[in-house]
Length: 473
Ligand code: FAD
Image 1: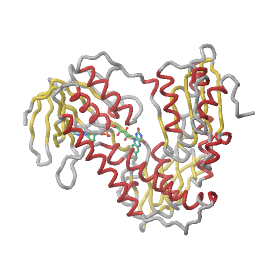
Image 2: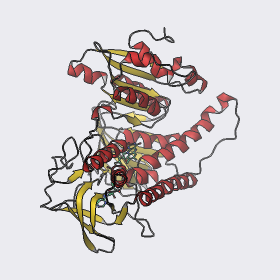
Image 3: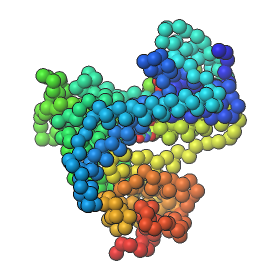
Protein backbone atom coordinates (compact mmCIF):
# COMPACT_ATOMS: atom_id res chain seq x y z
CA UNK A 1 0.00 0.00 0.00
CA UNK A 2 1.25 3.47 -0.90
CA UNK A 3 1.66 5.89 1.97
CA UNK A 4 0.98 8.94 -0.22
CA UNK A 5 -2.56 10.23 -0.73
CA UNK A 6 -4.19 13.39 -2.01
CA UNK A 7 -6.60 13.23 0.92
CA UNK A 8 -6.41 11.38 4.23
CA UNK A 9 -9.62 11.40 6.26
CA UNK A 10 -9.44 10.58 9.97
CA UNK A 11 -12.68 8.93 11.08
CA UNK A 12 -15.32 7.05 9.11
CA UNK A 13 -18.54 8.42 10.61
CA UNK A 14 -21.08 10.20 8.40
CA UNK A 15 -18.79 13.23 8.14
CA UNK A 16 -15.64 11.23 7.35
CA UNK A 17 -16.93 8.49 5.07
CA UNK A 18 -19.00 10.92 2.99
CA UNK A 19 -15.99 13.26 2.66
CA UNK A 20 -13.82 10.31 1.60
CA UNK A 21 -16.30 9.06 -1.01
CA UNK A 22 -16.85 12.55 -2.40
CA UNK A 23 -13.10 13.21 -2.60
CA UNK A 24 -12.57 9.92 -4.43
CA UNK A 25 -15.44 10.70 -6.80
CA UNK A 26 -13.70 13.97 -7.61
CA UNK A 27 -10.62 12.05 -8.68
CA UNK A 28 -8.54 12.46 -5.52
CA UNK A 29 -6.53 9.50 -4.23
CA UNK A 30 -8.16 9.08 -0.82
CA UNK A 31 -7.62 7.03 2.35
CA UNK A 32 -9.86 6.86 5.40
CA UNK A 33 -8.26 6.00 8.74
CA UNK A 34 -10.60 4.44 11.30
CA UNK A 35 -9.62 3.17 14.74
CA UNK A 36 -12.60 0.88 15.31
CA UNK A 37 -12.50 -2.74 14.19
CA UNK A 38 -14.80 -5.69 14.62
CA UNK A 39 -14.02 -8.90 16.51
CA UNK A 40 -12.56 -10.39 13.31
CA UNK A 41 -10.03 -7.58 13.12
CA UNK A 42 -11.76 -5.91 10.16
CA UNK A 43 -12.00 -2.10 10.17
CA UNK A 44 -15.49 -1.06 11.32
CA UNK A 45 -16.81 1.86 9.30
CA UNK A 46 -19.75 4.20 9.90
CA UNK A 47 -18.76 5.88 13.18
CA UNK A 48 -21.18 6.70 15.96
CA UNK A 49 -24.12 7.22 13.63
CA UNK A 50 -24.20 3.78 12.06
CA UNK A 51 -22.81 1.72 14.92
CA UNK A 52 -24.16 3.22 18.15
CA UNK A 53 -26.19 6.30 17.20
CA UNK A 54 -28.78 7.28 14.60
CA UNK A 55 -29.38 3.90 13.00
CA UNK A 56 -29.49 1.49 15.96
CA UNK A 57 -31.59 3.93 17.99
CA UNK A 58 -34.08 4.26 15.12
CA UNK A 59 -34.19 0.47 14.72
CA UNK A 60 -35.20 0.15 18.38
CA UNK A 61 -37.60 3.11 18.14
CA UNK A 62 -39.31 1.45 15.19
CA UNK A 63 -39.51 -1.96 16.91
CA UNK A 64 -40.91 -0.47 20.10
CA UNK A 65 -43.40 1.65 18.12
CA UNK A 66 -44.70 -1.43 16.33
CA UNK A 67 -45.14 -3.09 19.73
CA UNK A 68 -47.19 -0.11 20.96
CA UNK A 69 -49.30 -0.15 17.80
CA UNK A 70 -50.08 -3.83 18.28
CA UNK A 71 -50.79 -3.35 21.98
CA UNK A 72 -52.74 -0.09 21.96
CA UNK A 73 -53.87 0.82 18.45
CA UNK A 74 -54.77 -2.32 16.48
CA UNK A 75 -58.01 -2.71 18.44
CA UNK A 76 -59.25 0.70 17.32
CA UNK A 77 -58.75 -0.39 13.70
CA UNK A 78 -60.83 -3.52 14.32
CA UNK A 79 -57.78 -5.79 14.39
CA UNK A 80 -57.61 -8.32 17.19
CA UNK A 81 -54.29 -9.89 18.08
CA UNK A 82 -53.33 -11.86 21.14
CA UNK A 83 -51.45 -9.83 23.75
CA UNK A 84 -48.15 -8.87 22.08
CA UNK A 85 -44.94 -9.88 23.79
CA UNK A 86 -41.52 -8.39 23.32
CA UNK A 87 -38.49 -10.61 22.77
CA UNK A 88 -35.71 -8.14 23.64
CA UNK A 89 -32.77 -10.26 22.41
CA UNK A 90 -34.57 -10.75 19.06
CA UNK A 91 -35.18 -6.99 18.83
CA UNK A 92 -31.50 -6.27 19.57
CA UNK A 93 -30.41 -8.92 17.04
CA UNK A 94 -32.54 -7.25 14.35
CA UNK A 95 -30.94 -3.90 15.23
CA UNK A 96 -27.46 -5.44 14.97
CA UNK A 97 -28.32 -6.94 11.58
CA UNK A 98 -29.32 -3.53 10.22
CA UNK A 99 -26.13 -1.99 11.59
CA UNK A 100 -24.06 -4.77 9.96
CA UNK A 101 -25.86 -4.29 6.67
CA UNK A 102 -25.17 -0.55 6.61
CA UNK A 103 -21.59 -0.60 7.83
CA UNK A 104 -20.85 -3.37 5.32
CA UNK A 105 -22.49 -1.13 2.73
CA UNK A 106 -19.94 1.58 3.41
CA UNK A 107 -17.11 -0.89 2.91
CA UNK A 108 -18.72 -1.67 -0.47
CA UNK A 109 -19.01 2.02 -1.33
CA UNK A 110 -15.36 2.57 -0.43
CA UNK A 111 -14.38 -0.28 -2.74
CA UNK A 112 -16.62 0.98 -5.52
CA UNK A 113 -15.22 4.52 -5.28
CA UNK A 114 -11.61 3.51 -4.68
CA UNK A 115 -11.26 4.81 -1.10
CA UNK A 116 -8.54 2.97 0.84
CA UNK A 117 -9.71 2.08 4.37
CA UNK A 118 -6.89 1.92 6.92
CA UNK A 119 -7.37 0.52 10.41
CA UNK A 120 -5.62 2.53 13.10
CA UNK A 121 -5.60 5.58 15.26
CA UNK A 122 -4.72 8.70 13.33
CA UNK A 123 -2.78 11.67 14.63
CA UNK A 124 -2.23 14.88 12.68
CA UNK A 125 1.44 15.79 12.41
CA UNK A 126 2.95 19.04 11.16
CA UNK A 127 2.94 19.49 7.38
CA UNK A 128 -0.37 17.67 6.79
CA UNK A 129 1.03 14.25 7.60
CA UNK A 130 -0.92 11.61 9.50
CA UNK A 131 0.65 9.14 11.91
CA UNK A 132 -1.31 5.89 12.14
CA UNK A 133 -1.00 3.40 15.00
CA UNK A 134 -2.77 0.14 14.21
CA UNK A 135 -4.24 -2.42 16.61
CA UNK A 136 -0.89 -4.27 16.78
CA UNK A 137 0.81 -1.05 17.85
CA UNK A 138 2.61 -0.65 14.54
CA UNK A 139 3.17 2.97 13.55
CA UNK A 140 3.25 4.37 10.03
CA UNK A 141 3.13 7.86 8.58
CA UNK A 142 0.90 8.83 5.67
CA UNK A 143 1.85 11.74 3.43
CA UNK A 144 -1.34 13.64 2.77
CA UNK A 145 -1.87 16.44 0.34
CA UNK A 146 -4.85 17.33 2.50
CA UNK A 147 -6.15 16.03 5.83
CA UNK A 148 -9.82 15.97 6.81
CA UNK A 149 -10.34 15.38 10.53
CA UNK A 150 -13.71 13.74 11.24
CA UNK A 151 -13.06 12.22 14.66
CA UNK A 152 -16.60 12.78 15.95
CA UNK A 153 -17.75 12.91 19.53
CA UNK A 154 -18.23 10.82 22.66
CA UNK A 155 -20.83 10.89 25.43
CA UNK A 156 -20.19 13.40 28.22
CA UNK A 157 -19.50 11.68 31.54
CA UNK A 158 -20.60 13.29 34.80
CA UNK A 159 -18.82 12.58 38.08
CA UNK A 160 -22.02 11.97 40.13
CA UNK A 161 -23.08 9.12 37.83
CA UNK A 162 -20.05 7.10 36.69
CA UNK A 163 -20.95 4.69 33.89
CA UNK A 164 -20.27 1.04 34.81
CA UNK A 165 -21.70 -0.40 31.57
CA UNK A 166 -24.14 -2.63 33.43
CA UNK A 167 -26.43 -0.65 35.71
CA UNK A 168 -25.35 2.86 34.82
CA UNK A 169 -24.95 3.15 31.07
CA UNK A 170 -24.44 5.78 28.38
CA UNK A 171 -26.36 5.87 25.09
CA UNK A 172 -24.34 2.95 23.73
CA UNK A 173 -25.19 0.73 26.71
CA UNK A 174 -28.87 1.70 26.45
CA UNK A 175 -28.96 0.12 22.97
CA UNK A 176 -27.90 -3.23 24.41
CA UNK A 177 -30.24 -4.00 27.33
CA UNK A 178 -31.13 -7.69 27.37
CA UNK A 179 -34.48 -7.16 29.06
CA UNK A 180 -36.88 -4.31 29.69
CA UNK A 181 -35.91 -2.58 32.95
CA UNK A 182 -38.79 -2.29 35.38
CA UNK A 183 -37.78 1.21 36.47
CA UNK A 184 -35.51 3.21 34.22
CA UNK A 185 -33.89 6.49 35.17
CA UNK A 186 -32.63 8.79 32.42
CA UNK A 187 -30.39 11.74 33.22
CA UNK A 188 -31.00 14.36 30.55
CA UNK A 189 -34.19 15.31 28.70
CA UNK A 190 -32.35 16.07 25.46
CA UNK A 191 -32.79 14.36 22.12
CA UNK A 192 -30.95 11.15 23.03
CA UNK A 193 -32.50 10.84 26.51
CA UNK A 194 -36.02 11.25 25.14
CA UNK A 195 -35.47 8.79 22.29
CA UNK A 196 -33.93 6.08 24.46
CA UNK A 197 -36.41 6.72 27.28
CA UNK A 198 -39.20 6.30 24.72
CA UNK A 199 -37.86 2.97 23.46
CA UNK A 200 -37.84 1.32 26.88
CA UNK A 201 -40.94 3.19 28.12
CA UNK A 202 -42.97 1.85 25.19
CA UNK A 203 -41.89 -1.67 26.05
CA UNK A 204 -43.14 -1.34 29.61
CA UNK A 205 -40.41 0.33 31.68
CA UNK A 206 -41.50 2.99 34.13
CA UNK A 207 -39.33 5.86 32.91
CA UNK A 208 -38.29 8.87 34.98
CA UNK A 209 -36.33 11.56 33.12
CA UNK A 210 -34.26 13.81 35.39
CA UNK A 211 -33.33 17.13 33.80
CA UNK A 212 -31.30 19.84 35.52
CA UNK A 213 -32.64 22.68 33.34
CA UNK A 214 -35.91 24.39 34.22
CA UNK A 215 -36.99 24.55 30.56
CA UNK A 216 -37.95 21.56 28.45
CA UNK A 217 -36.15 21.39 25.06
CA UNK A 218 -34.93 25.00 25.25
CA UNK A 219 -33.51 24.84 21.70
CA UNK A 220 -36.98 24.16 20.29
CA UNK A 221 -39.79 26.65 19.65
CA UNK A 222 -41.49 27.16 23.02
CA UNK A 223 -44.99 26.33 21.76
CA UNK A 224 -43.78 23.11 20.14
CA UNK A 225 -41.74 22.18 23.23
CA UNK A 226 -44.82 22.65 25.43
CA UNK A 227 -46.96 20.51 23.13
CA UNK A 228 -44.24 17.85 23.03
CA UNK A 229 -44.01 17.75 26.82
CA UNK A 230 -47.78 17.29 27.00
CA UNK A 231 -47.76 14.43 24.49
CA UNK A 232 -44.78 12.62 26.06
CA UNK A 233 -46.30 12.92 29.54
CA UNK A 234 -49.54 11.45 28.18
CA UNK A 235 -47.44 8.51 26.96
CA UNK A 236 -46.16 7.95 30.49
CA UNK A 237 -42.70 9.56 30.44
CA UNK A 238 -42.23 11.18 33.84
CA UNK A 239 -40.12 14.21 32.91
CA UNK A 240 -38.85 16.15 35.93
CA UNK A 241 -37.31 19.52 35.17
CA UNK A 242 -35.10 21.48 37.56
CA UNK A 243 -33.81 18.18 38.93
CA UNK A 244 -30.06 17.92 39.46
CA UNK A 245 -28.58 14.47 40.06
CA UNK A 246 -26.01 14.63 42.85
CA UNK A 247 -25.11 10.95 43.23
CA UNK A 248 -25.80 7.59 41.60
CA UNK A 249 -24.63 4.42 43.31
CA UNK A 250 -25.11 0.77 42.42
CA UNK A 251 -26.45 -1.10 45.44
CA UNK A 252 -27.65 -4.71 45.36
CA UNK A 253 -28.16 -4.75 41.59
CA UNK A 254 -30.09 -1.48 41.65
CA UNK A 255 -29.09 2.12 41.13
CA UNK A 256 -29.80 4.54 43.94
CA UNK A 257 -30.02 8.06 42.57
CA UNK A 258 -29.91 11.15 44.76
CA UNK A 259 -31.08 14.44 43.31
CA UNK A 260 -31.97 17.93 44.39
CA UNK A 261 -34.85 20.13 43.30
CA UNK A 262 -36.23 23.45 44.54
CA UNK A 263 -38.22 21.36 47.05
CA UNK A 264 -35.19 19.65 48.57
CA UNK A 265 -33.09 16.46 48.37
CA UNK A 266 -34.55 13.14 47.23
CA UNK A 267 -33.48 9.57 46.55
CA UNK A 268 -34.94 7.08 44.11
CA UNK A 269 -34.08 3.58 42.99
CA UNK A 270 -33.93 2.32 39.41
CA UNK A 271 -33.03 -0.98 37.74
CA UNK A 272 -30.99 0.88 35.12
CA UNK A 273 -29.82 4.45 34.72
CA UNK A 274 -29.00 6.03 31.36
CA UNK A 275 -26.67 9.02 31.41
CA UNK A 276 -27.56 11.15 28.38
CA UNK A 277 -26.29 14.61 29.21
CA UNK A 278 -24.78 15.46 25.85
CA UNK A 279 -21.70 14.72 23.78
CA UNK A 280 -18.26 16.29 23.57
CA UNK A 281 -15.78 16.44 20.67
CA UNK A 282 -13.30 13.55 20.47
CA UNK A 283 -10.28 15.78 20.07
CA UNK A 284 -7.82 14.38 22.59
CA UNK A 285 -4.66 12.58 21.37
CA UNK A 286 -5.55 13.60 17.84
CA UNK A 287 -3.10 16.41 17.22
CA UNK A 288 0.69 16.53 17.52
CA UNK A 289 1.76 19.59 19.49
CA UNK A 290 3.22 21.15 16.31
CA UNK A 291 0.32 20.23 14.02
CA UNK A 292 -0.75 23.86 13.79
CA UNK A 293 -4.37 22.91 14.47
CA UNK A 294 -5.95 24.54 17.50
CA UNK A 295 -8.93 23.76 19.70
CA UNK A 296 -11.50 26.20 21.01
CA UNK A 297 -12.23 26.56 24.72
CA UNK A 298 -14.71 23.64 24.63
CA UNK A 299 -12.32 21.23 22.90
CA UNK A 300 -13.81 21.59 19.39
CA UNK A 301 -11.31 21.86 16.55
CA UNK A 302 -11.25 25.50 15.57
CA UNK A 303 -12.36 26.02 11.95
CA UNK A 304 -13.60 28.84 9.72
CA UNK A 305 -16.90 28.88 7.78
CA UNK A 306 -15.38 26.49 5.25
CA UNK A 307 -14.15 23.99 7.84
CA UNK A 308 -10.50 24.94 7.33
CA UNK A 309 -8.33 24.72 10.45
CA UNK A 310 -5.48 27.11 11.13
CA UNK A 311 -3.02 24.65 9.58
CA UNK A 312 -2.70 24.78 5.77
CA UNK A 313 -4.43 21.84 4.00
CA UNK A 314 -5.97 20.54 7.22
CA UNK A 315 -9.77 20.62 7.55
CA UNK A 316 -12.18 19.35 10.18
CA UNK A 317 -15.84 18.40 9.83
CA UNK A 318 -18.73 16.88 11.79
CA UNK A 319 -19.18 16.60 15.54
CA UNK A 320 -15.54 17.51 16.21
CA UNK A 321 -16.24 21.11 15.09
CA UNK A 322 -18.74 23.81 16.13
CA UNK A 323 -22.39 23.59 15.14
CA UNK A 324 -25.14 21.06 15.78
CA UNK A 325 -23.98 17.50 16.43
CA UNK A 326 -26.00 15.97 13.62
CA UNK A 327 -25.02 13.36 11.06
CA UNK A 328 -26.36 15.29 8.06
CA UNK A 329 -24.55 18.48 9.12
CA UNK A 330 -21.27 16.52 9.21
CA UNK A 331 -21.93 14.84 5.87
CA UNK A 332 -22.62 18.13 4.12
CA UNK A 333 -19.48 19.64 5.63
CA UNK A 334 -17.60 16.59 4.32
CA UNK A 335 -18.94 17.19 0.82
CA UNK A 336 -18.13 20.91 1.01
CA UNK A 337 -14.53 20.27 2.07
CA UNK A 338 -13.94 17.56 -0.55
CA UNK A 339 -15.25 19.90 -3.24
CA UNK A 340 -13.14 22.81 -2.02
CA UNK A 341 -10.04 20.60 -2.05
CA UNK A 342 -10.96 19.73 -5.65
CA UNK A 343 -11.06 23.46 -6.42
CA UNK A 344 -14.82 24.06 -6.42
CA UNK A 345 -16.07 27.26 -4.71
CA UNK A 346 -18.88 25.68 -2.67
CA UNK A 347 -20.19 26.76 0.70
CA UNK A 348 -22.70 25.41 3.17
CA UNK A 349 -25.92 27.07 4.32
CA UNK A 350 -25.85 26.65 8.09
CA UNK A 351 -29.24 28.40 8.41
CA UNK A 352 -31.09 25.51 6.82
CA UNK A 353 -30.13 22.46 8.88
CA UNK A 354 -33.13 20.45 10.04
CA UNK A 355 -33.12 18.81 13.45
CA UNK A 356 -35.34 15.98 14.59
CA UNK A 357 -36.28 14.13 17.76
CA UNK A 358 -37.51 10.66 16.80
CA UNK A 359 -40.05 10.23 19.55
CA UNK A 360 -43.58 9.39 18.51
CA UNK A 361 -44.81 11.70 17.27
CA UNK A 362 -41.60 13.13 15.91
CA UNK A 363 -40.45 16.66 16.66
CA UNK A 364 -38.70 18.50 13.83
CA UNK A 365 -37.49 21.99 13.20
CA UNK A 366 -35.66 24.23 10.78
CA UNK A 367 -34.76 27.90 10.98
CA UNK A 368 -35.59 30.38 13.69
CA UNK A 369 -37.87 29.75 16.66
CA UNK A 370 -40.47 32.32 17.69
CA UNK A 371 -38.42 33.22 20.79
CA UNK A 372 -35.30 33.77 18.64
CA UNK A 373 -37.19 36.09 16.28
CA UNK A 374 -38.50 38.05 19.25
CA UNK A 375 -35.01 38.30 20.73
CA UNK A 376 -33.60 39.45 17.36
CA UNK A 377 -36.36 42.07 17.01
CA UNK A 378 -37.56 40.60 13.69
CA UNK A 379 -41.24 41.23 12.86
CA UNK A 380 -42.85 37.92 11.92
CA UNK A 381 -46.15 36.24 11.10
CA UNK A 382 -47.21 32.83 12.41
CA UNK A 383 -49.28 30.08 10.82
CA UNK A 384 -50.30 27.06 12.90
CA UNK A 385 -52.17 23.98 11.76
CA UNK A 386 -53.10 21.20 14.18
CA UNK A 387 -52.97 17.58 12.96
CA UNK A 388 -56.38 16.99 14.51
CA UNK A 389 -57.74 18.87 11.48
CA UNK A 390 -55.82 16.64 9.02
CA UNK A 391 -57.93 13.92 7.42
CA UNK A 392 -54.89 11.74 6.83
CA UNK A 393 -53.67 12.05 10.43
CA UNK A 394 -57.13 11.16 11.72
CA UNK A 395 -57.40 8.21 9.33
CA UNK A 396 -54.11 6.95 10.75
CA UNK A 397 -55.24 7.54 14.34
CA UNK A 398 -52.13 9.70 14.70
CA UNK A 399 -53.40 13.26 15.10
CA UNK A 400 -51.40 14.69 18.03
CA UNK A 401 -49.38 17.84 17.40
CA UNK A 402 -49.17 20.72 14.95
CA UNK A 403 -47.19 22.45 12.22
CA UNK A 404 -46.06 25.97 12.99
CA UNK A 405 -44.65 28.19 10.27
CA UNK A 406 -42.93 31.52 10.83
CA UNK A 407 -42.52 34.08 8.05
CA UNK A 408 -41.09 37.57 7.82
CA UNK A 409 -43.87 40.11 8.42
CA UNK A 410 -42.73 42.31 5.54
CA UNK A 411 -41.26 40.01 2.90
CA UNK A 412 -43.26 36.86 3.75
CA UNK A 413 -40.02 34.86 3.44
CA UNK A 414 -40.16 31.65 5.50
CA UNK A 415 -37.94 32.03 8.57
CA UNK A 416 -38.66 28.79 10.37
CA UNK A 417 -40.90 25.78 10.66
CA UNK A 418 -41.52 23.71 13.77
CA UNK A 419 -43.48 20.52 13.85
CA UNK A 420 -44.54 18.00 16.42
CA UNK A 421 -46.62 15.36 14.77
CA UNK A 422 -46.67 12.25 12.59
CA UNK A 423 -43.76 12.06 10.11
CA UNK A 424 -42.51 15.47 11.25
CA UNK A 425 -38.97 14.58 10.11
CA UNK A 426 -40.09 14.13 6.51
CA UNK A 427 -42.56 17.01 6.57
CA UNK A 428 -40.00 19.54 7.77
CA UNK A 429 -37.76 18.60 4.86
CA UNK A 430 -40.30 20.15 2.48
CA UNK A 431 -39.83 23.45 4.28
CA UNK A 432 -36.04 23.02 4.30
CA UNK A 433 -36.17 22.82 0.49
CA UNK A 434 -38.51 25.81 0.31
CA UNK A 435 -36.22 27.85 2.57
CA UNK A 436 -33.16 26.81 0.56
CA UNK A 437 -34.92 28.27 -2.50
CA UNK A 438 -35.75 31.48 -0.60
CA UNK A 439 -39.46 30.69 -0.67
CA UNK A 440 -42.19 32.85 0.81
CA UNK A 441 -45.05 31.37 2.81
CA UNK A 442 -47.28 32.33 -0.11
CA UNK A 443 -45.14 30.23 -2.48
CA UNK A 444 -45.96 27.19 -0.36
CA UNK A 445 -49.57 28.29 0.02
CA UNK A 446 -49.90 28.44 -3.79
CA UNK A 447 -48.35 25.00 -4.26
CA UNK A 448 -50.64 22.04 -4.96
CA UNK A 449 -50.38 19.34 -2.27
CA UNK A 450 -51.73 15.82 -2.76
CA UNK A 451 -54.82 14.82 -0.82
CA UNK A 452 -55.09 13.20 1.61
CA UNK A 453 -51.53 13.54 2.88
CA UNK A 454 -49.84 14.65 6.08
CA UNK A 455 -48.05 17.20 3.89
CA UNK A 456 -51.31 19.11 3.64
CA UNK A 457 -50.63 20.22 7.22
CA UNK A 458 -47.53 22.07 5.92
CA UNK A 459 -49.69 23.63 3.19
CA UNK A 460 -52.35 24.70 5.68
CA UNK A 461 -49.75 26.17 8.05
CA UNK A 462 -48.39 28.21 5.12
CA UNK A 463 -51.93 29.36 4.30
CA UNK A 464 -52.48 30.17 7.99
CA UNK A 465 -49.53 32.59 7.93
CA UNK A 466 -51.87 35.05 6.20
CA UNK A 467 -54.94 33.82 8.05
CA UNK A 468 -56.27 31.83 5.08
CA UNK A 469 -56.13 28.21 6.23
CA UNK A 470 -59.06 26.31 4.78
CA UNK A 471 -59.57 23.55 7.30
CA UNK A 472 -59.45 25.43 10.59
CA UNK A 473 -62.01 27.83 11.91
P1 FAD B 1 -18.73 9.99 14.44
O1 FAD B 1 -19.94 9.39 13.85
O2 FAD B 1 -18.61 10.05 15.91
O3 FAD B 1 -17.51 9.21 13.83
C1 FAD B 1 -16.20 9.48 14.18
C2 FAD B 1 -15.35 8.29 13.81
O4 FAD B 1 -14.00 8.66 13.94
C3 FAD B 1 -15.54 7.10 14.74
O5 FAD B 1 -15.75 5.94 13.98
C4 FAD B 1 -14.24 7.04 15.53
O6 FAD B 1 -13.87 5.72 15.88
C5 FAD B 1 -13.26 7.61 14.52
N1 FAD B 1 -12.07 8.21 15.15
C6 FAD B 1 -12.05 9.13 16.15
N2 FAD B 1 -10.79 9.49 16.42
C7 FAD B 1 -10.00 8.78 15.58
C8 FAD B 1 -8.61 8.71 15.35
N3 FAD B 1 -7.76 9.45 16.05
N4 FAD B 1 -8.16 7.85 14.42
C9 FAD B 1 -9.02 7.08 13.69
N5 FAD B 1 -10.33 7.10 13.85
C10 FAD B 1 -10.82 7.96 14.77
N6 FAD B 1 -27.68 12.47 14.48
C11 FAD B 1 -28.62 12.68 13.54
O7 FAD B 1 -28.41 13.50 12.64
N7 FAD B 1 -29.80 11.99 13.56
C12 FAD B 1 -30.09 11.09 14.52
O8 FAD B 1 -31.15 10.49 14.52
C13 FAD B 1 -29.12 10.85 15.52
N8 FAD B 1 -29.34 9.95 16.50
C14 FAD B 1 -28.37 9.69 17.42
C15 FAD B 1 -28.62 8.75 18.40
C16 FAD B 1 -27.67 8.45 19.34
C17 FAD B 1 -27.94 7.42 20.40
C18 FAD B 1 -26.40 9.12 19.29
C19 FAD B 1 -25.33 8.79 20.28
C20 FAD B 1 -26.14 10.07 18.32
C21 FAD B 1 -27.13 10.37 17.38
N9 FAD B 1 -26.92 11.32 16.39
C22 FAD B 1 -27.90 11.57 15.46
C23 FAD B 1 -25.67 12.09 16.30
C24 FAD B 1 -24.78 11.49 15.20
O9 FAD B 1 -24.50 10.15 15.52
C25 FAD B 1 -23.51 12.29 15.10
O10 FAD B 1 -23.82 13.65 14.86
C26 FAD B 1 -22.65 11.79 13.94
O11 FAD B 1 -22.34 10.43 14.10
C27 FAD B 1 -21.37 12.60 13.84
O12 FAD B 1 -20.65 12.16 12.77
P2 FAD B 1 -19.07 12.31 12.70
O13 FAD B 1 -18.66 11.64 11.43
O14 FAD B 1 -18.69 13.70 12.94
O15 FAD B 1 -18.51 11.48 13.94
